Amino acid sequence: MSTGKNKLILFCGPSGSGKSTAVKHLLSTISELAFSVSATTREPREGEKNGIEYYFITEEDFQSKIEEDKFIEWEEVYSGTRYGTLKEEVYRIWDEGKHVVFDIDVLGGLRIKKLFPENSLAILMSPPSIEVLRQRLIDRKTETAETLERRVTKAEFELGHAALFDKVIVNDSLANALLEAEQTVREFISK
Ligand code: 5GP
Image 1: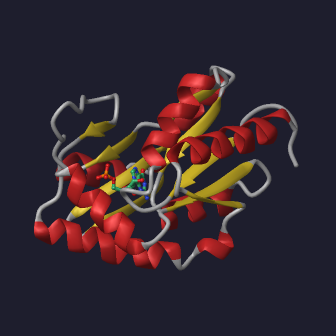
Image 2: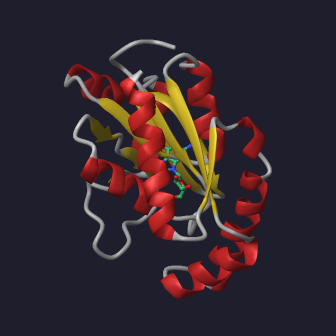
Image 3: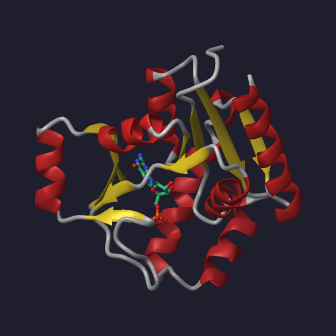
């Protein structure tokens, strides 16, 4: 285990697992953390701002960044929609003396863990079941019938990788899941 600085906290899990809520909770309660804002080619959802949730960029810009080797990893998370972690973003946060928190898909998260095995904590947020996840996505009202099915299919795939994670948090009670996430991260960064 490395000491002190330059840690990576990888939050993975399907959309609707509570992963983004957990990330927000950690950022608001643990001052030593900062969020790695990814680049994406998807359109902003209502209320999302460039540079806060994501850097919303065009396909052309994304392609240039790949060619210029600006990404630690990138992934076509959904067909036709790419997401990537920028090297610059991670090094800037480390330079500020903080640990980096990622909201990232399972493959991207595991790839980063492989690159930084000593100082990464990979957490998988899991819904209690696929049916609960489907209902949460329906209630969220951000999905069309097609994107809903895509997200559910991807969730099944992602949850199949649970054994590769340092910690799996089952979100059957959000309050408990947030507490567990906070305790796990506090313990990891104190080492
Ligand atoms: P959403 O469109 O719901 O914001 O995110 C879709 C998925 O992409 C989520 O699982 C999110 O964690 C993941 N994601 C966000 N940024 C990145 C990234 O930089 N790389 C990878 N591989 N996945 C990402």
